[in-house]
Image (cartoon, rainbow, N blue to C red; front, side, top):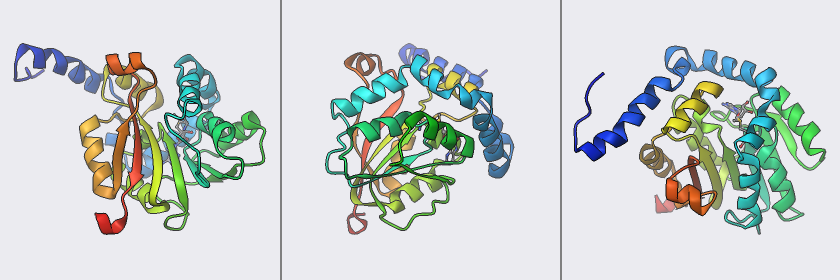
Length: 246
Ligand SMILES: C[S@@+](CC[C@H](N)C(=O)[O-])C[C@H]1O[C@@H](n2cnc3c(N)ncnc32)[C@H](O)[C@@H]1O
């Protein structure tokens, strides 16, 4: 183990990062993207995917996410065409159905057909258009949506750039996006181990988003306590930069 450089304070900060890197799941670094994606799909298709709603309740992702839409921390008002990426058990889609304008359309996609089926059963709604798709190759025309929500999916891509570029492509200029992603903290490392995903360094992710035309409008926090403790992972409202402004 190498000793990190810097002041004692910096060293205290870096040690958990290093431990986190040890704990973090490594599968995606060892196999091809296709092999990895098949493993992820298998995982979500299977019993672990069946427990996703329970896990999201226990981690408070569902109630805290709902609070964010209810309080309009991320405001859906005026959004006409919404895309929910990697819908899973419909954790975010349920809030979208509740808080978006009644005339808004909602499209949900996931690589796991089984997760889409579970979401449909859970939501009991005919509103969402559901389809199986991979975040790195989206079957939508440029600028199809004026709002995108992407909760804990990007960490399932070894390189986030192609997925973010696709999201920037299908988001209309000026459109907004809510991104939730697993951070490179200790908590994030355990999440990564459990769900076979990677974690992100906040600054690196910020840079990639800006590169592909997704401007970090505001960093959001579930509560004041999350902000104070810098807990709860990466949560950002982004805006699609018009092409001529890039
Ligand atoms: C942790 S769940 C997130 C569910 C929900 N979005 C939320 O915020 O709780 C991750 C979901 O992303 C899906 N997923 C993983 N990789 C994907 C990819 N490349 N394209 C589309 N969906 C993917 C999984 O099948 C799973 O349903």
